[in-house]
Image 1 (cartoon, protein in one colour):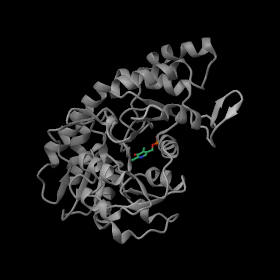
Image 2 (cartoon, helix red, strand yellow):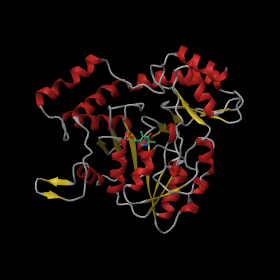
Image 3 (cartoon, helix red, strand yellow):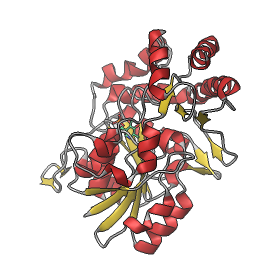
Image 4 (cartoon, helix red, strand yellow):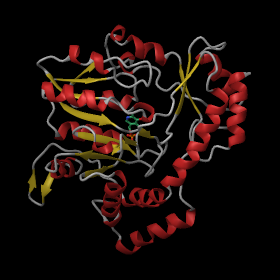
Length: 359
Ligand SMILES: *Cc1c(COP(=O)(O)O)cnc(C)c1O
């Protein structure tokens, strides 16, 4: 059985060695030694000045939205994981859905300005599949209309665009370190941000809004990363370059079989992007089998692909949005399948998966 993803883990002994200190310190959470070390190492790896760790990527996003004091409407896309839209709505804000473009499935920057009203406070675009949004155009729109920009960079760990590490784009970026992501801390996430003064706000929000022993300054929650998660993060960070190199080999093997096949659309590498090969999305458009037929064929062979992202977030039962406003996203969500992609996927299995798709 081949799953769509498989978590990266360090050698068992390495993790055991890393957690020994925790038995000595008996300090399990609340900004412990591992947590501090991981924040420092990630700042370095991601090339950012300000970074705050969280229990997961979702809470990181929820809390940076809260911490930046956004109000009213937020422009975003529905072609994403539930988290992006939920984080906006759970902050009492109204998501305004912008369509995506047909090439890399990120926000269609030419459709943003017509959605801006006097209530708009921010744009929350998604670097979907690790494809980086048109950040230059987004920055110029945000400047012109005085909007904040928070990137959902859950898929973009370790990437660089035009020589810039992606955590530096916008006012803030959220990375997810969930077990299924390129880099994991079991569960975890972080926010990187420009405004240094956000640091104390975020640190308080993730710890019940507690400022010090006698003062509680905000209606916070509990979203702290624990020491065991941070220890996993320290170990996995040592191996991240190798893991991405292995993913690259999988990507290239897939391309060797699928690139150029009529009716199959793939995300191609771009000269200005240092990618992380997080996902391998395939759009079946006019192919001899449709997306659901391919998914079924794979499943019959114990290979799990994912309809990622289907359904669109603006079609969820818990929401009542007008899906006709994002026709490209709707179309792609009906045609896309992410096929297995992880560092340890054997190239012979990649061959077998492609044989089934092409057969
Ligand atoms: C994984 C993911 C998240 C949420 O991250 P968690 O760490 O699982 O909470 C948010 N947005 C996108 C696009 C994701 O893929």
